[in-house]
Image (cartoon, rainbow over all chains, first blue to last red):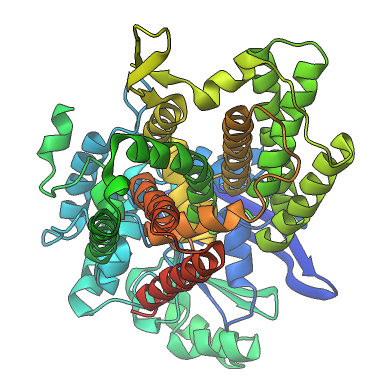
Length: 263
Length: 343
């Protein structure tokens, strides 16, 4: 637990979340807390239930049973708009971009800016997009091209821009650096640190141990739909986390080592 | 629009975003085809380029054009509407029966259009609620609407609907008629047919809706990547429902134009019109896989089909050969569409 946040109300609490598909239990009574300014790594094999849990929180998937609270208030997230309304933004691994639309249209998709007469305000959306994209990538010039013609990095930047442009309090990032080169990965890392300093809570789904240990305050590991560990990042090392991911438990010598470290 | 000029690209304010170079190229080639057809037919027949024939083409194309506009919206969402030809007939019949029941022409026509919109709403609900693929859903509607039109009328045309019913289809703006000394009227300028004016208005309204309104943006987004649109908060089902309803309403409008022109409500009219309308949209650059298409492109496509039919008629080509030619054009257009997607 990040000690310095213990006094505050969690940004998000997911309590006893369950989700079944047919007879398969994808998420089995998982609880999660995220505090302001905290980066929590969500880890696990493919199919361990982490994507499912994240999709429930982003409103893309219905809740089986359990409760979600935002700032202590119970919320119902029936669709992505509900999640966005309470400040939960998601960067999907697939990026979720409409390929034939340009960057500003994608950035504002579903939340288009309009003129007084209800027309799309493309000029203003272009200006806003230019500004926010330039902050993430100064070389982003081809704003009017359909996004299918852009590079993987540029597409990622649009997806990130869309998640931070609006009044974001909780950010879910699903493999945000998987499609990126080294310099863009560094940019995303800087961005995560900056957002954390602004008090935004971040759930980082990642397979990249380096990213996780570099950026996260805490790790949550899922295995076969269950939460098998939630640890402050300085309590565990890479092997401990791998053991949790693969075996669903910490190495047998973990508590001993941890006691040593404490002394 | 001053802000439009700010953008570095050439097209309209938001259009450039949806118009990659390949699409511009496609539309340019369609326009070129249209010009070639006009030149070719003008050389083949002197009467082709006469004022009267140009107006005839406008009139003939207006029905396909109206259907094509509705289909363009549906096709951009990634769907298809095979029912428009039958819905056209059902709407015309509905108007005819309402007039027979004693209602004035204008409300009767409004009712006919509403019946078309209703068919479209049913299409949209079957697609979005029952999750039936659009091809099957609208194929079912195609059979049901046609069957209903034939059943309601006993397969017999409804005639003697009065002169005012024929005004929409046969009237014209700026018609100049001079009374001759012998007492017979002489038409100096036949005027711009109302159907052509209606087509222009509907096309402008549809283009505005697709480019400048949120619903238009969502129609493109839905067809481009439905899941992404959904995750972005676009109400995908409502967007599709809107597109199918518009397609139905425009089929209803086209039905009224056509029946008005015949001054008879014909339950068997409009068979296979959906194919001409789909062909118009695809020739004009709309992609059957969704996310791509413009009203101006569809208008070019509609005129290519209209001129092809008219020109072949004028050149004395038999109706059978015409079918072969149009069929080849449809295949060619879809082939071009596929090549574009295999880029």
